[in-house]
Amino acid sequence: MKKSTYIILIILFFLALAAVGTIFVLVEDIGGRAVEIPARGYLEVPLAGSVPEIAPPDALVSFLLGTRPLALHDLWENLRKAKVDGRIQAVVLRLGLLECDWAKANEMREAILDFRRSGKKVYALIDEAPDFDMEYFVATACDRIILQPLGWLGVNGIGGYVPFLKGSLDKLGIRAEFEHVEQYKTAYNMFTEKGFTPAHREEMQSLYADIFDQYVATAAKARGKTEAEFRALIDRGFFQGEEAKTAGLVDDCLYEDEVQSLLRRDGGTLLPVRFEDYTRIKPSSVGLESGASKIALIYAVGTIMTGESLPQIMGGSTVARWVRTARTDPSVRAIVLRIDSPGGSSVGSDVIWREVALAKKAKPVIVSMSDVAGSGGYWIAMPATKIVAEPQTLTGSIGVLAGKFSIDGLLTKLGVTTERLVFGEKADAFSPFRPFTDEERKLLKEELLWIYEQFLTRAAEGRGLTRDAVDAVGKGRIWTGRQAKDLKLVDEIGGLTMAIGLAKKEAGISADEEVRLDVWPRKRTLWQSLAGRPGLGLDLKSATGREKILETARMMKQTKIWAIMPFWVRPQ
Image (cartoon, rainbow, N blue to C red; front, side, top):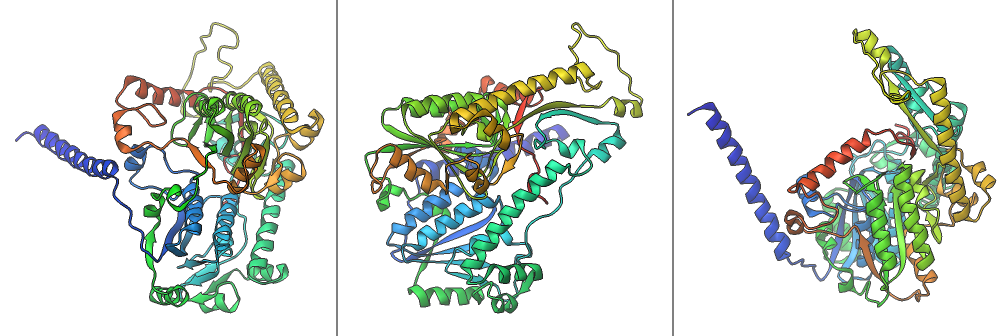
């Protein structure tokens, strides 16, 4: 048998395996496996790893990824359901290292505390965690914190190192040539500096000092300690097993069988309920979202680009269309726009801004900010009726930047030569093969200043402030949500539950009414994805769908004016 024949057979074999797997998933997806909840159970929550705002709406994407990450929306909704579900007697959080920031952690705490108001208990289980401050912050919302007897618990503060790459680029002969407005707009400082500028250091110091102060105050109160006592424990840093219990950081050091005994002691015989299974329980089945009024909950997540959304990319056209649909739907009484974005394209941001401004004229629009709503992420929030942020939300960053990388020095080192051929004196202004001229830098700065003025004007109109008042807290600076409220950049401190409550109030809906939530992006089943129906999913079968992906890839290489925050805000 020829080698080519073997290759063809192997390919056909793997295609057949993929087809069989798809059929099994399709059968489950179409048939809808019934979820059986025991009469007395506890909800198991595997809270670790990446925590996106909302799970991929397209079942095909989840299938191709091979896993469904635990999303904050699902955690929020499942705890709301479990709070009123008589079958769920307790919640067990199996807490591991989280890949999110402090605002999401605070949202988790709020959801846990709200669940506990039912009188039911929440247990946080920790195996070992040498660097666990944000996760421990979440755990302090629980009734009991349980550590594995040999577990190592690190509660040692926050911070780290911010990398700067200019020295490496200099050695390579690459120059990062960027203009920005203004001094706190530090998204490209990692490429243009060898260390903190005074403004950059001031900004970072202020951000994380405030977050650290909030952490200490919250955790100390939850554990019955003074702030000074908790800071002393942080300075000690690491605790193993009984040391953590003696220090008052955990309540028990137990093995799994002992945890089960504790659950039986506190609540009788309880059976576990898988988080993924409970996610499939509809809120209406436990009495939630049973009212006549409807609120649109729109998730605006990811880096903002013009065009349509893709996984991890917020398309300006897509989100604008969702807002427009909610605005023109007479059954929708109010809109909650949930933002988790560092910004991106200023044009893409402005496309969404326009629709939010139009929607506000028709019905209340409440913005709920998650981990980050900065720069373009703040741009799309500005015209809202009210803005709600967590105390740790990274917000503001009112500023813009643009530029390029010049590699002519690198090419010289490599012996590569180029010849210039242009029709139009500035046709190659953004070419990587030469630096900007002084005139081009001046023109670029003027363009950025004009965009910045638009940013200031829109912020002033939306927030009811003067242009100069916005400029004073702008200049590209990032603030925590708590700081932003003092500066009138946000209205209230709270999470998604507060935002929905405000939406009800602004729309004249009774606080006691269980509103129906119309969540965008809409979920699409695997069958719908493979059938290629319109939506957020990637229609790989059509030439249009494939071209959209190529178009987005090309778009990300284009020269743009950016309203975006630093890629590395959080020290590592």
